[in-house]
Length: 498
Image (cartoon, rainbow, N blue to C red; front, top):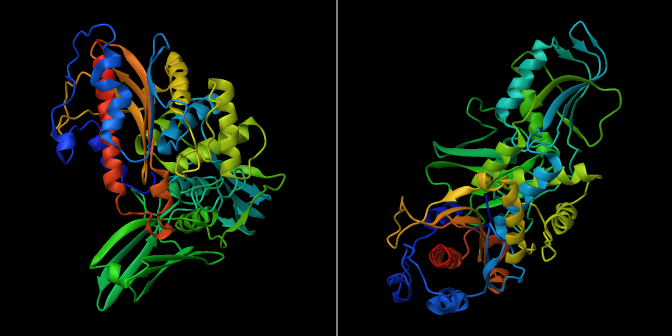
């Protein structure tokens, strides 16, 4: 769940040395297997790092740094103090922020509360589903809570059904500049369900289509009422979105549907979504609830009936970094900011609080983030800043085990199982923006921290909002950026690992 280009291709292509055209099809400029080098070889090899970058000819800006983990010595840098969008590499800092403020063992709680007495199995008051900032709550969890409510002896609710989402601010879209239909930029609030995505599926049915909108997980597929889809006889736009007050109203172009298919769409009303699904699950246990109403403040005097606790923060962050889950980054970042004191009202305000923390904690004075996921392109981070944070984080051993191993590939694109360079890193991809940051271990065991940021902001700025899902030229540019990252990693592993 990155920006606008497919991130899966990035993970698969990292380290490949073959590119179309004679400029990149030739043999590597240095051996993939490190050998002893004479003094000053690093500065001379292939014309130095600036020469490598210049010959590669990637349009836009390139900034990178690499340092020795044991000594902290900067080994090589090119425009290391230049601030560029980090894309999803920003999630490494969000992980450190959440671990430092909340703690690795932190769990988020989602609760069912009674606002009134319970008499003979009847709640003489309101039932409240209260979100606690859990970014990984799914339909299966709500089903377990509905069953637990029944087991607690509740068979009837005489009052209203309320959903409390006020622990975190409500944000309509992580990055409002993204097209409406992109599921990796959903709304954020104090409650989230299924990563705030709703499943849209369509099938041929006679002259038209049958359409479903549901909150499916592995065990359950409850239909939802708060999100609707209408098919319109047109070619473009493929999707439109409208705020229906108590619902998300979508339309889709009939010309785009074919014989059938499915995709996830973002949810803009997380509290109503969770309430809609829980109401269906409660009804399966004979508990009939009124349609959900949203509240941002909890009334006094509530009594807890049921509590669901999330997994611990550490494995949650590992999955966040592996799958680059934007909503997890935003919710754990916002939760950390709340824990520092006072609820920020926007992602930008919370990200500013995280940036200030990073300056104090790691000396990252050249970093100013606009969100916690890196999805927006207004964030800036310098390679030197990230490397400094990585060096300090490595001393505690908390970060590298959370990062994903990146397989290096040969010039034919095949993974080299015994490749001498081992990399654990976080990738980041937006249209015409590509980043990579983490750790590499050379053949001789030398460990290095590195950061590579590339961006062509002029070309990115020319993309119309409607075209940001698959803009022309972005895939090719990002592929070349990944190839440059691979060259840099090979260089550092070869030169400094001997």
